[in-house]
Image (tube, rainbow, N blue to C red; front, side, top):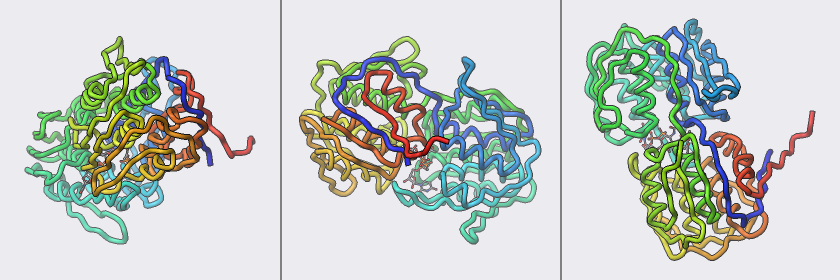
Length: 429
Ligand SMILES: CC(=O)N[C@H]1[C@@H](OP(=O)(O)OP(=O)(O)OC[C@H]2O[C@@H](n3ccc(=O)[nH]c3=O)[C@H](O)[C@@H]2O)O[C@H](CO)[C@@H](O)[C@@H]1O
Ligand SMILES: C=C(OP(=O)(O)O)C(=O)O
């Protein structure tokens, strides 16, 4: 298994190009199941999760072509579900990636049936999908759970309905929206997620002919249409990748220009960074993060649905706070088990105490390098950030987590001065 080796202590300086958002692309790829015409996604990131979604769709008979990122449109993925042969998402693919559940809504909306393996829990929490299923039931789908699978079916078309999510859910909103666009009549979805990835999904659906109002607000009004056309759509920039590199600049007390992204996508993080003493400004085609010469001070964080501070940035923020002046409290509100990085940060010399859903972090003057590993994507990248700032050598194990969400991580960091390399155990062919 590959590992990442870092020697910390270099202030990063340079430019990082931010890619398309993993979490947007994972919702946009299943959109192809809603039409028999081609859906082309530009600015698509080249990540393990994208290849897993491609494999899942191919298993169903969707034609998928992943084109290399040679054009100005970045990597382009063409998807065509004109000759679907299977409406099953098997356990072997779903267990590799929870976002596989996002095929459920489109399958039942256009094909009247779906059999999708239940994703189960994961390292960060139990992560039920009950609200995905309740929303689809409200639209008239008959749902049955058997042998670890969700069996969904509808006679004729789904029917527009009103559904209020008792809790904000990103995936639940995406599934309900993709189902509602082909339902008969009007659907009102209340208390929906407002993440940029939802807006991106909505815009893509609109470009295919869907009638959606309220994107970016807590209520979506959808008037169902009989069919949708193909489209060409650019995936929104990855706000979590943006935030992660912003924190790479901050934790090394360096300076990075982030291109291909937008400050609006990371406003809550930018607000926290500025309060911590880091300068963040708009730059041509992105933003500039400058922490040179500034003492970084402790700032509390509470994770919340967008536009609040993202749970997917919590671990990275903790790495920064571990090196800040003073104490800070980090409260995780979205997932019940998202502090798995804490013991590893402590092995690197961080001073952290957990009290229920909050962690008190007292900054230390210097972390020290160590062999570490994490059980999920953002926890892993938080250890990379810690390693960039630590004295001496850090080896981050289980790099496959990083490959789910960060394209060319070590190359992007190395180009800005980081001492980082991938150690591969694979023997050359
Ligand atoms: C592929 C993708 O886009 N993943 C993101 C998505 O995950 P995902 O869509 O799985 O996250 P949700 O927004 O659905 O989860 C939010 C909370 O709602 C709970 N819940 C969710 C659905 C449900 O049916 N019942 C229920 O109780 C979850 O357990 C969690 O506590 O949003 C999360 C929250 O911003 C991010 O951390 C993930 O990176
Ligand atoms: C939690 C994440 O992804 P997923 O929902 O696919 O597990 C993430 O991107 O941080």
